[in-house]
Length: 151
Image 1 (cartoon, rainbow, N blue to C red):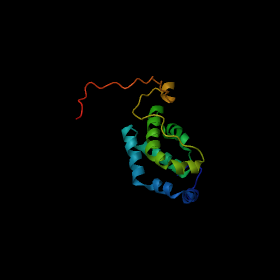
Image 2: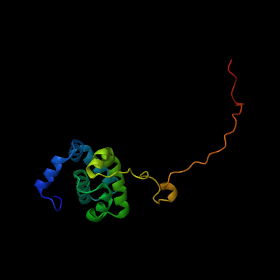
Image 3: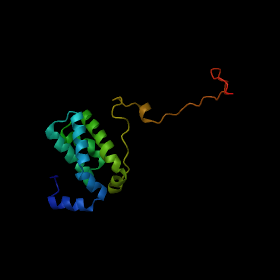
Image 4: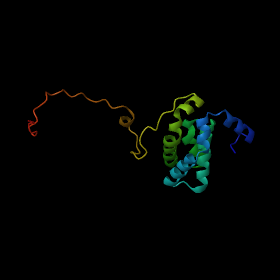
């Protein structure tokens, strides 16, 4: 049970949710994603339940998605890097497909993960800012000497 909420309050919250979030809360796919992400990141069995509980808090509208990683660190007890990886993957596979509904629920814009999960761990300013392509002067088209003429 979530701290600060009794069973009746949680059901009232659940009943006010959009159908997409209701479905996601009890979907087998959601549980499978959570389990797979935790297994991949070597999260202990007892902590998997807490990760699922934190995910449920976001889907219920109790925990804003931008505080999800922090909750995994503090409440679940995951190390910072593990919490970051788990949060990124759950954001990608569970929260992002529900982006529009969650934005409406929390009345904030939800951004996708900033970079691929398998990318470099260090974030540089170059990686976070859009790249500006240098325009190269256009050269006139050259005759392709390797092509045979078509008759």
